[in-house]
Image (cartoon, rainbow, N blue to C red; front, top):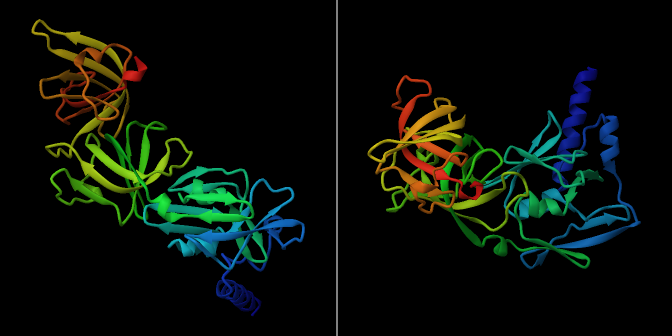
Length: 346
């Protein structure tokens, strides 16, 4: 009987919180940690009006005397911006998604998930009278909104945030994790840029033929139109509006190795082979491979611009893409389809 009563109480509490417009309510049995994040409104704080695309919303933000920056109500702002919010009862967190932007927020934790990568803002979300507040910088750094603080007002302008930038580069990773989808170009690991892909992201070949995320593979050279707003993470992430494959022929079985040229060999006919040692970009890719440079091998820099074979020198960082047809030697030998040269490392 006691278990039934407790369950009913929790359900009633959540129902009341959602109906009153709060981001999400704290559980009825409050832990010591949650008690630290659940506070009440104080008179010793500055109040901020919140304006979204020229219209002022009912809820306001605040900044206490000891606060680093204004705090703003999560639910009312993000719903006005078109985000879908989901309450995770298991870990008491909120998931937000809107197109290519996906994040998780948890009261009391200065750790914000940006499409599966974590960042900090210096201020943790706070529960105030059962409403979840986040620092104002969350709007620009995490969900990519054009936000400014002007006096006692916080101004959000989505039209400015929709301005586009264009980048060209070679795909080094494609991730399809259900809600979270992305493509990395211009580098591996913490280098390059992560293009967050959503339902509204257009993906096509250079001739305009529509393709899907599953048709993108490492080694493809693409042009991406994305937001001017990027996260401060490494690598930075940004919402992407359009991805265009620039390769004339689509080859979807390429392997890739990112590393350093350990050796350069040239035969009597002037043919060049390079030994690349580093890390494989896929399960079947090699950590060390000898790549023969043919007349058809595409040599470019990270921005997709053509470079000369004379830049293939020992010690240069490269990303080599090649066919899975390799010799059984150690290291295996293959034909380079495309080599991305990091000229800045020379």
